[in-house]
Length: 343
Image (cartoon, rainbow, N blue to C red; front, top):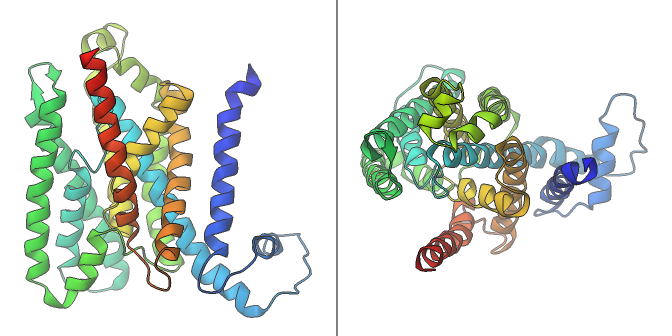
């Protein structure tokens, strides 16, 4: 039994390690995964590896590709973890940060911050995620309020409210972009999820937000399980429903905002990964959330590799790749839901 319990973690962790190695190895200059691994090991304290590789390979890996890879993995983990939390919170398999408007709200907040002149780069670096977080929280409060009818949360109204507010936020974002011609190209790339930053600075800036948000979500697996019984029964089981929901919203919005602020709007990761995990390993959120976090990093790394190699040397925005994969997946989910209703 113990082996079967840990097997999903072993499989997901192995896939994540392979995706990390592939992401660092593949690029304009190909570096063999074995060399990448040896360079990694050579940087560990107490490990002495023979340095038979060129110095440029070390620079490319440690200063360019590794920070990019870590940022992509963190973004995927944040989006998938928050997607799992939103699905459990709303008891709706279609609730992901993109579809219910949270990503667009975070994007609007980030663009508002980017449109301002900040006195130092350090302040600007932290102002954008804070503004994105506020945008995400305001959005989820509005969408939740619009979708709620009495004590229940209707699936249809949730999606409609999310789509409507997402369109509104996107329109405002476009308006701000048009008023800032000099930043138009950068902002457009950012909206398509193609502005993943480079270097270790954004990784270090993003890490606290994602770490705090994901750790909170990881501690709330049992809470999400109890919420699946409905608010009344969860209350009878001793759960402080409203406080738990507020904490879940804050944690999920924090991780979404951090991902959007540093990597742009990347859709469908928060929808696809929790769904696949639920199909493969069950609906228990004590395992679904951590497995989604690991799987989200893997999926976005694979999408990022595709974005870099499909039209090389041109690099596609990674948001385009996830949308091309996610839209058919979303239609498949709708088809399954329709089939269940009909039969």
